Image (tube, rainbow, N blue to C red; front, side, top):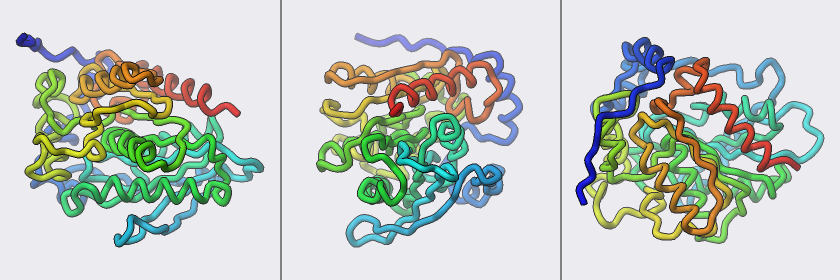
Length: 325
């Protein structure tokens, strides 16, 4: 049966207005030639590092810990509520950036907002980026950092029974991948996985992917750039590992409770809805939110929009239910 694909869903009116303003500085299509200029800040303004202490509310430390066997060590950025006198939940953060951009401070302000409401210790991993470091380097770095964090939970002030993985976009995809690795390797027992607009499927051929070609943020061309950087010529082929693209996993049983959210007007909509559906079909637990008219990363780029506030509140409600202790 041939699926008729209609026009893309309209953007939420508040988000559309924000996108009109952002569009002047935010390319919708990222190509391989743009990766280094974007890293250098020549094509995209790079904000300075924020005050991660938030005027003393958090302590900030950096640790270099062992990486995957035979590979360099990795840096973990550890941000903890100041003066905590008991073990707290742990939020293991994997940043976004399409597998090609970003560092362990990217998006951490969102987790600090969570930690301000649900006191938690944040551990954000610095992983190697593609294309210089293709699969499996990024996911193995992330897994090595997670394993170290779990093994040193007491030292970090983390309750090992309340450790979750969390990330947005590529970070959401990598979070899903390390959850699969933890299950399959008998690794850390995770209390949950928070997957925000996760990048899960290298095939880049869902109806939402086709609908969003040339529109919004991180369109089909950008997605091709990110996956090709990670996988090279194997992207879209038959032999892609589920630890690179979790949508390729044939078994989603035995995963921790999962939160997934995504906008209806973005590339990743259909693969994310399918991932949640497949977790349910495997007997697992997943909470799925599809925000109408949301573009990729809408709550980061337009945080004051009503729909962004709703999305952020839903995430906090899930965290409170999951991590109350």
